[in-house]
Amino acid sequence: MNVWAIVPVKPLGRAKSRLSDVMEPDFREKLATRLLKQTVRLLLLTTGIQGVLVISRDSKALAMVREIGAQTVQESGTPELNNALLRGTQALKVWGATASVIVPADLPLLTRNDVEEVVRLGRYHNTVVIAPDRHDVGTNLMLVRPPGIIPYAFGENSFAVHQRLVQEAQADLLVYRSERVALDLDTADDLRTYVALAQRLNVPLIEPVASGGFVSVHDSQADHKPI
Image (cartoon, rainbow, N blue to C red; front, side, top):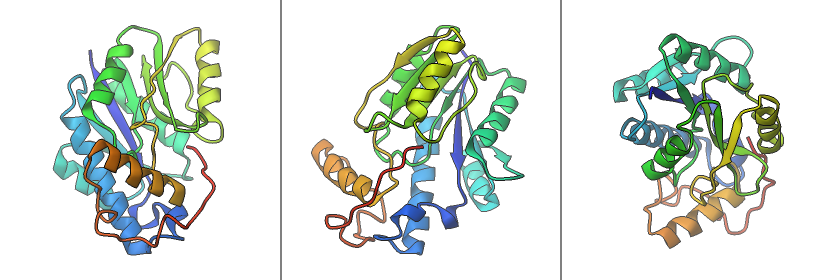
C-alpha cells in the first residue's frame, strides 16, 4: 500500500482566529505552529503512512515542515480548502499513491493508533473512512481509496455531505469514532473540552495551553463551526 497523508494548513499568523476572544495573536500562532509540527511528526512515524504532504499558502510553514521530513505544495489562487486538497490529491496520484488520508493540523489528541486503525479500515479498494467531529457534523479525518474517488466537501455539514458522496460513488463507507480524533481546536468551548479530556486521558497539554496562554476558557463561550 502507498498511503499518503495530506495536511492542509492556513497561514500560521492568521490561524485560529476564532480563539481570539481567549488567546492573543502571538499565542494563537504559537499554538498553530505546535499543532502543525506535532501532527506532521506523528504522521511520519505512523505505520502504513508512506509520506506526508503539507499544502499551504504560508511559505514559512512549508519550509518548517520540509525540515521535519514532509513534502510540500504551495497553495495559490483564491484560498479554498477543497480546491487545495484537490491539488494535493493530484500530486499524490502522480507519485503513485493508492490512498490518501486528510488530516487537519488541529487535532491535539490524535494518536498514531488512530491513524493506523483508519488505514487498516480503509485497506480495500473503493473505500472511504470518515472520522466525524464530536458534534457529528464536521469531518475531522478522512481516508479515500483510491485518491479522488469522491470530491472533497469540507465545510458546513461535511460529515453528512461526504457520506452522501460516498453513496453516489458506490463506494464502501466506514465511520471511525474516537473521542481523540473528534476533538479539534476551533473555539473556546473546544479548548475547554480539550483541557478536560487531556487531563482525563493523562496526556500533557500542548503549548501555549499548558502554560496558560489564554484567558479563562471556563467562562468563555463560542459557537462551534465544523470543517
